[in-house]
Amino acid sequence: MARFEPTSTAPVRERAILVGVDFGKNDDWTLEESMAELGRLAETDGADVVFTLTQRLDAPVPRTFIGKGKVEELVSYVRNLDADVVIFDDELTPSQQSNLEKIVGEPVKIIDRTALILDIFGVHATTREGRLQVQLAQLQYVLPRLRGMWSHLVGEQTRGGIGSRFGQGESQLEVDRRLVRKRISTLRDELARLETRREVQSKARWDSGVYRVALAGYTNAGKSTLLNALTGSEVYVRDELFATLDPTTRSIELEEGRKVTLTDTVGFIQKLPTTLVEAFKSTLAEVRAADLILLVADASDSGVERQVRAVRSVLDEIGASQIPSVLVLNKCDLLTPEAFSDLQASHPDAVTISAREGTGLSGLLYRVAREASRGDATVTVLVPFSKGILMKMVHERCQVIREVYTEKGLLATVSASERMRSTLAPYVVPDENFEPWGSTAPTPRQ
Image (cartoon, rainbow, N blue to C red; front, side, top):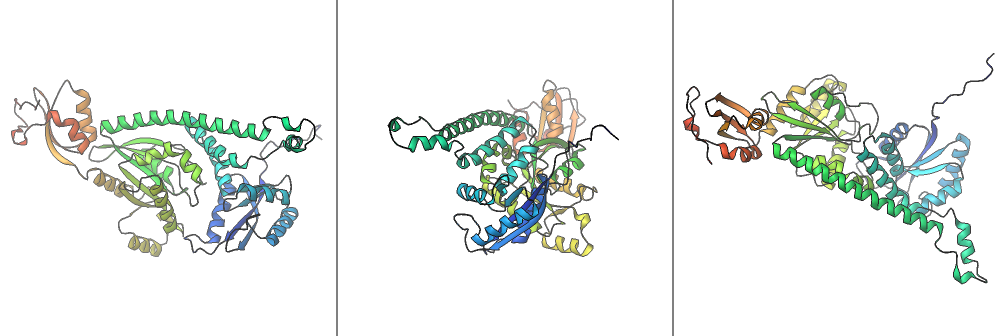
């Protein structure tokens, strides 16, 4: 017999009770679907859902969000099921959260969907910018919820009697709030500096003429899998919500020779907290700066239409709704032939693929190439040999129709975007003077 019993160091999964309210607003998402998604969020964050409690109300109860009878029912389930945490599907006010904590009692935690998503983001953020963004969102959420753990000092200030007019100075709660506000200000300054750096990098890509494609979509729609399939990279992929938080950019060369960049971004979700949208605005700037958005959706999900609308709503919120987009319906390998035909009929302009199986990717790349060449025009240029970088850009950023190396440099007719035509403007020559096999070539405009 062993002298010491081994103790497991694996984290103990918490037992969670989910609470949802149907307000009868006829939203896109039914209460059952929203609660199912909340359950997936809870599982992603390391909890096991042991019970789901729902109620039908016209409006939230000001004191406890749910009715008095439901609160008593909730307390009973917490005790009988030995729950560690209660998660509400809607955002609670600070006072509602405080009242529920008092009624349910310690050590059971009362949180809402926003706090749950923030916690998941805190686990999955890996880069410095991502961690700063999560900290900012968490502090903005916590600030109005700070409560007096130092209430005994406040009691001494309000007791009255001799010396009471001098008080005890600043209360600890006020100190805590001041420190949190100071930290929020510091984080905003740091993120502003990082955003400036990102804008410089984005401008450099703009000046280089690289066509930028951003992958946007509902969380767990397969954006990272698609990025890996198209670029041969090994971005972290897992079947869980918000597996990707930090943007990842990879380059790919299209069949015509044009090079484009693909950026994988954070997934969206219904009821995405406003604090997260604000905190992640520098990351979401990658979407706003894109030339094309591939809106990736999970075709196998019964709520795919609602997911697409939720993503478009967030794109509109961040000012990216005017950017050209292509709907990419992923995971089509999981559909029956009948469902696949219905999907194609309802979305004739969409591209249907399976990133995991690699089917439909050539069609997607063709669509990207077609979008990238939209607005292109044909010009003939003579690039001197001294402009080696520009020669490389011609081959990477343009579709070369014909070319020949002459005594004076590269003479080529190319299909180029407006940005590249602007860059090549000093080297444009008349097309009728193109002599592919001649030893002389016209002189470019000065």
